Length: 211
Image 1 (cartoon, helix red, strand yellow):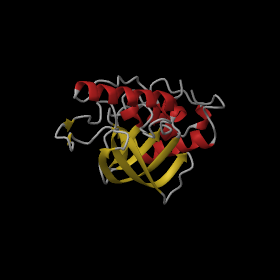
Image 2 (image 1 turned 120 degrees about the horizontal axis):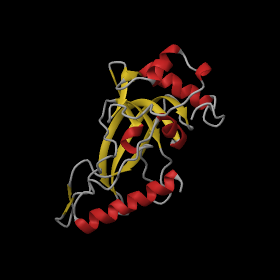
Image 3 (image 1 turned 180 degrees about the vertical axis):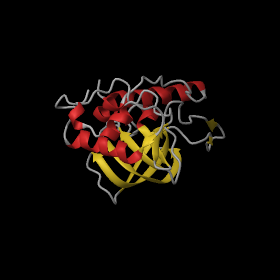
Image 4 (image 1 turned 90 degrees about the horizontal axis):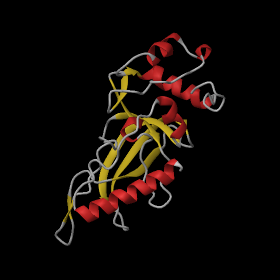
């Protein structure tokens, strides 16, 4: 099953659960650990930039969403280029919302999905938008959204498992990259972004040089 097909079915299942139960599907998404190789392979777009706007709402089809806009500084994969703004919608509200009929829609962003904040600097490994809903999120869900702070970068799980079992031909790596792949916790953003960019541009995964 493709990532976009999976995401579409997941979103629809979560919507159905929220409507039927009248409660957020907090544990609907069970995260399977995704390392860096898997994130790069599964992402349709990989962008670095600043989150400039975060809002939420309910679509004409009744889908609760959070809308995120990123001012793109750079892109390692996909058609986006620096200087562009990219807006997408992810399943779930920022907070419960009172509807015109007086009922409260509590379909907030499920546990395991990334949370977004205006002003944060991020690197996002984005799935292709779901064909049926148009909704989009990151590969590996919260694992695929990394936040930059003080020159270091980490995902919601402090990069747990991010470099586990990642194998890259040694002659392709710098000393800093070798050290990073053995590290735990936040890593140097320039080293991380540089490795990801080269991995994509030089097709390391397709050539079997990154596994």
